[in-house]
Amino acid sequence: MQAPRPIYKLLPRMSYLPLVTTSVRDHFVNYAPAIRGDLWFDFDGKPLKWHYPIGVLFDLVHNCGDKNSSATKLPLEITVHFTGYPSELLPCRTLTTVNEHFFHSLKEGCYLKYGTSSIIMNMQKSLHLKMEQSLVTGDYRLYEEASRGWAVSESKCQKIPIRIMIGDGFDANTIKNRLIQPSLEMKDLEGKPFTLRSALKNIFPSLDLTFVRAVIQGIKVPTETSLFYLAENMCHADQFLYICLSLHKTPQNPSEDAHSKIEQRGSQHTATEEEIDVVGREGSNQKIKAKTSTEDGADSKLESST
Image 1 (cartoon, helix red, strand yellow):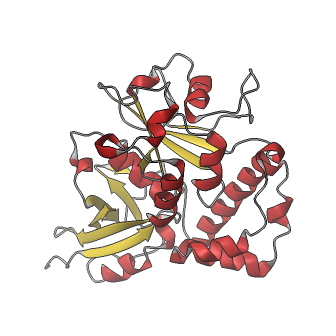
Image 2 (image 1 turned 90 degrees about the vertical axis):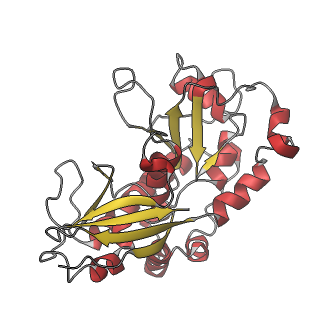
């Protein structure tokens, strides 16, 4: 059987793989076995968890993955499977499962942030559908229309919804969970608003942050940036701020104590908060390329890049 032509897809960071890969299934239908509802993906032999936003998966693989692997090459090569669904992945037989997972996560994020999930529980059906459509199309305007009026001041925010994704370089005996969801108040024990740096020190008190890279929405963020600012401007659609961490042998944050670094210009320029906002909102898509295996038609390969 002749191998199919590769397929390229530009996928929104805010969405989830099962919601935006119908065309992938259709592309390979003549090369794959009888397709039921068990399509899944892997990168470098490791299954990709569909319940993580696409942008988070990309950051874990490309920005916080093994720099000696194929993760450094763009587009990324991802394998699509139509059989042998792994037991380690959450079941996902229909797209309804994805929507249910998203709104469950959204209710959790809103409860942490606002102290109540009623904002989601009482959402009009039309807004509910508009939000679902935004995930499929990647149209952020639809999401903004559905979530209009949610913003609150820092003084009224209860907690910061945050999820920390552990990438490459960390000792599995030191940090056993690859996803950490801390309960983080708005201020530290000294009554100061959290920065990204002080929040990470609060969560990992013995970790030397000099060698830690923190990536949010595909951007290496200055660690002195306000955590509330990041949560308001760089959170995902479920209201959680996903921080992808990787540990390196060379310093990643050599001058942590200088706020001026955030504003620095020239060849050593790092993004200001305003620039982070622009990139985080506009640089929101990923590309995918795919091709099937020539042996049994059970697997396909995709490649993804910014």
